[in-house]
Structure formats: C-alpha cells, structure tokens
Image 1 (spheres, rainbow, N blue to C red):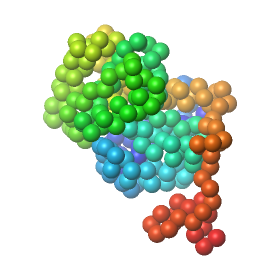
Image 2: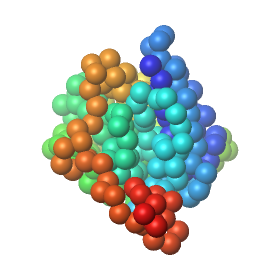
Image 3: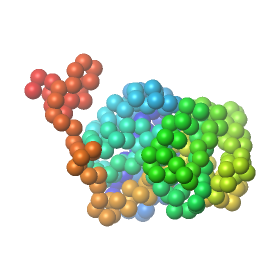
Image 4: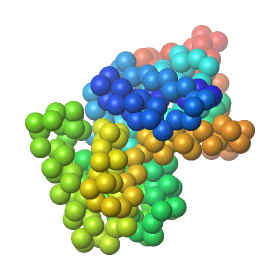
Length: 245
C-alpha cells in the first residue's frame, strides 16, 4: 500500500522529519510518499495559521496520485474534516490518532505541545475525541520552528514540561503534541520509562490497519463529497465544478 504524508505547512525539513518517522514504523509492504504544502504559513501555530494552511493541504491531496491513505502531518489536525470530505481514501490526523493510541496504553496521559495558543486548540480537540476526562494538555513555550534549531533550548523546555506532567498530572504516558517532535519519541521513552506516543507513527499504523481492513471514510452525512457549486475569486480553483459551469 502507499501512504501519503502531507505537511500542511511549507517547511520542507519538517516534512522530511515526519516522512523519516513514518518509514521507521511502516510495514515492509508500505510505501511512504511525502508532500509539502506549496502555499501557506511556514509553521502552524493557532487558528489563523491553520485556516490559511487548508488550501495548500487540499492541493497536495488533489495532485498526489495513487495513494491508499493519507496522514495530515500537523498535530492541530489542520483541515482534517475538509480533507475527509474531499478524499475517497482514509485520512488520518495526528492528534486523533495519538490520543486514541494513548488510550490503549494508559488511564491518564498528558499531551505536551508547543505554545499556549496551540494548547487551547489541542485541548478542544482532545475533548472532541472523547479523552477530556483522561488527558491533560500542556504547553512548553516553544515556537514550532525552534524545534529545528538545536541551539534554541527547545528540547530542554520540552523535557521540563514532561517532567512536570509526570510529577503533577499523574500522567502514565506522554503524547508529543507537534509533528516537529516526532524524532524525539524513542529517546524520551527511554529516559522517562513511560510510553511516549508520536502522532505520525500512530497515524501511519492506523492508516495501514484501515487499508488492510478495506475501510474508508463514510460518505454519508458529515463527510459527504462537496456539493457542486461555483467558488469565487481566489478560491475558484477549489470549486467542485468550473465556475462557468
């Protein structure tokens, strides 16, 4: 099977980091292909960035060919609902996949993310996914792109927040709340001796399971394909029909 990893921000190094993590856990018969949005923000930190990243995400989903499932490589699950409405294959989000997997492993867990604005957004997602009573979300005060800079001190901030989660939250597992943290999961698990869940790895394994089971997103109701209608102005290219049709 072929799984597409789409980074909805425009930073190619983050795409490669996610693709590397995906290939490390993919089954032998799974091919990982990766795409980086060509328009939108360089990082996604909050609702405004996320809204403007969705068109770039949809373009990559549209233009890639021959994939059996796709993973949206942003922990905010940016554009996930729109992508599921657009696509006819399973589409996985990092937050939803990671908290589902953490729920198999621990009664209590903590998601450690980047900035406070992302913490609020992710906390809302965790509640939507039914884990609000079992999970806490913490911010480590790290701008996303600082995870790309070894001299930024970001890893120290992340570790300090994980230690607070273990000491204060009663966390039995940790979820890394940013795609830019995906390369740290194994090391942190060894350091702290608790399960550390990375959303990219979780999403890839769940995507493989859905494809193997012959399951895909329901097109009845909320994820039904978009109704044909013209879209105007700069959005005309996204119309389900030609604007002059």
